[in-house]
Length: 319
Ligand code: UDP
Image (cartoon, rainbow, N blue to C red; front, side):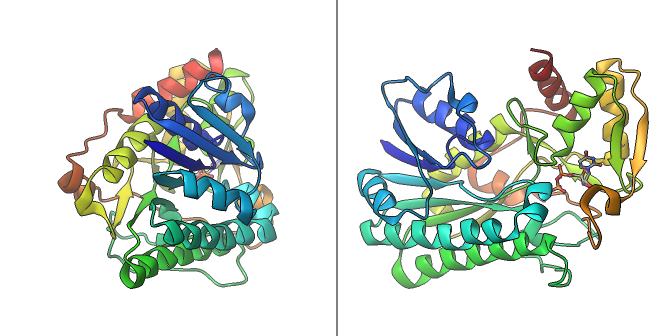
């Protein structure tokens, strides 16, 4: 099959590209290298079935040609990283809203199936329970910049569902929860690569807030496996799926685990949110997926637990 990955030089996109090539597909990657890196695809860049285009998904003539050629599209290109989003609100909205609009409009023109990478961020400030696909969203004030990202991705979901309902375009939406693994950089704020790098360099591990906020981390290999299986499952079309791992950990415990597993002497420092992200920042207290729909639909079980996930990130940075 010919498959287009937008954002294919990104952390998740590059792992997906590798898997799709392994399975014998011809893979087209478009990436503007905003947060994507050529280093992510160095192993496959010269592969005879990989075609790399360095350009923005907002370039409609390039996208027109790529989507025309492709049998399927995995749309992963988006603004990523809380720090990056706080620093670049205009690019965030442009990429996430206009970019997805371009992808869906052109995919509809040629009737090509599209996977839309969405995010757990769209659930907003839930605290009560594990999050299911039908749950309400709890958004903060428009004055809090963080929520622009959640709203832009929510609009992506609405756009995709609209194309499915009104135009019969085959789409499906994966709400990716915190995804980690080799090649993820800490540059855009992500917690695990930052903790591991600090621990290995014996620098302070900076826990933002009081560390009681929790997350659930999925290994990128599990996430890629899940989204490929969703794309191959006809009953998943037109629907939304949480994609992640439901083993929950507080950020303070994550810091302690990283410290223990690296044998590091690093101090654990508690940094106020305001100092980390600037004034008016709101965090999500809890974010754990209910993945029963994913299990029911494709029989998916995560194959990495938290410990093996952390270990793979440690091994990567040691290398
Ligand atoms: N965090 C932290 N130290 C860091 C980076 C992040 O304590 O160096 C916290 C952050 O405030 C959040 C959690 O770790 O509560 C996860 O942050 P990340 O940016 O990785 O993802 P998010 O789930 O917030 O999108």
